[in-house]
Image 1 (tube, helix red, strand yellow):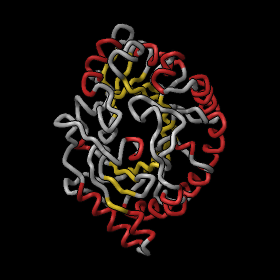
Image 2 (cartoon, rainbow, N blue to C red):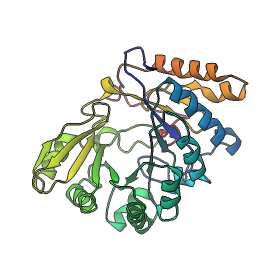
Image 3 (cartoon, rainbow, N blue to C red):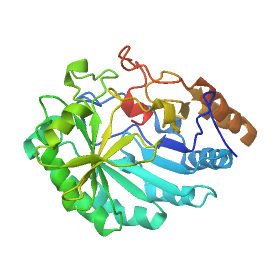
Length: 327
């Protein structure tokens, strides 16, 4: 079955936030004091998440990504991975994590059926890591990456949010770090959204600027890629190092978007940057059957904009910052 929005974009990918909690306090994501957490009973259970995925798979979903908050904070996460892995039609389960708990969890997650891992790594400098994350956990992240590789998660992808004047002088070092591990480095243009906006737009470094700096060390050329992948891929002809850019601010990829998002509280959202959602939790806990869940998917797809409006204004989500949506 082909599941599409009103602009005929086929939806095959669901990003699921499994928790709002996080063991970091990254300056572009969460206030230093944290957030007011909703009671755990308000979060979708593993059984409810699996039911949503099962209905979505019948519509045509084939890829799931687990996010947070920090997904590895959710107790017994391998159990959820195993439940999703057993659903017909799902052929890839990925996770985005800060990596600090991977030494403990990489192997059981792999055994449960997790396919891929993206690790957030904004800096290689311990002092700067403390500044960015407000936590002294860089050694745990780096060890977690090594243990994930040992568990069979190859290739890894490393993600860095690039902020002008903070970590934009580390682009080449980060790319080399990833390449030495047979992995791809992906640089994300800073998106000023939510209540923790960091000096808004003047912190954003565009892909074109990043390319200029990287070419000091890397002979980069574009590489063909999957049009539905938000990362624009480049490869170094000399070394083979692969680098991706997520260009939400400078070069939109909305016309090929194939994804939706499920929040930890059960809101089905058509877009990270669109303040709209369908209350799927009420459907499930109100006794709705699978046809009602399917209808919720279709209603959410009908809400999806042709393209986000990040360059027209800076959205402020009073109750749904990025960490609550699953950024």
